[in-house]
Amino acid sequence: MKPKIHITPTAQSLAEFACDWLVNLIEEHCRTHSAPFTLALSGGSTPKRLYQLLAELPVATIDWKRIVLVWGDERNFPKEHADSNFRMVKENLLDHIDIPPENILAVPNPGALPEVAAQQYEALLRKELSPGANGFPVIDCVLLGMGEDVHTASLFPQTMALRESSRWTVANHVPQHNTWRVTLTAPCINSARHVAFLLSGQGKESALQTLWYGPFDPQLYPAQLIQPTDGQLWFLADRAAVGKVELTN
Ligand code: 6PG
Image (cartoon, rainbow, N blue to C red; front, side, top):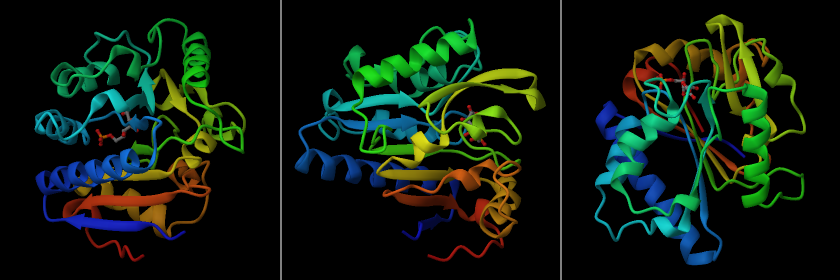
């Protein structure tokens, strides 16, 4: 399935488009499914404005009781730490919406033992999300960012997580940043119905060029692993992120 692309003039219009796009996905899902809509949130800075816009929607727009939130990845810090992806989502979204606590499937005990956190996170997801035919969950929408090194989630170049083929979540040592992360694995992300890269700013242009036109080498360029099995891949980007990259679908 070819990726779908939407390019906006600015970072703000990207967040606004992404908000409308996500609301439409949710509305469509809720019209045709009784199960909740599962949304995997990206960390980093790019999605903050999107989360703020979701939080500012008129209350009736999204019935958060029908939404389950998971994290695409988490840094190895406690939830109150300034670098925590949970804290970023809490400050920009969770503190402003009426979502049942049981719908918030955050990485348990981040900042302790990463492998334990990864195992507990997988157990939590397996308890709440039913596996699809391939043994992985069918998450309705996974939001992803991308780093200048073409990493996505916490799938960093030449790290062990890139080779995982059966677990849903793993602890991943990232020597480039001398840190541990907990991340959804590529096969888990690829089982989603919709996977959307949200890209903003000129710092993304080179990585986007490599992702689309560079040599296929996922060990070096992990975002190349993201090829949804049956789902739809999206590139939602502002003009600065795209630059001179020829994005054609
Ligand atoms: C994280 C993210 C990571 C992020 C990219 C882009 O925990 O940091 O999961 O994959 O999406 O590094 O980050 P920015 O949006 O800040 O550019």
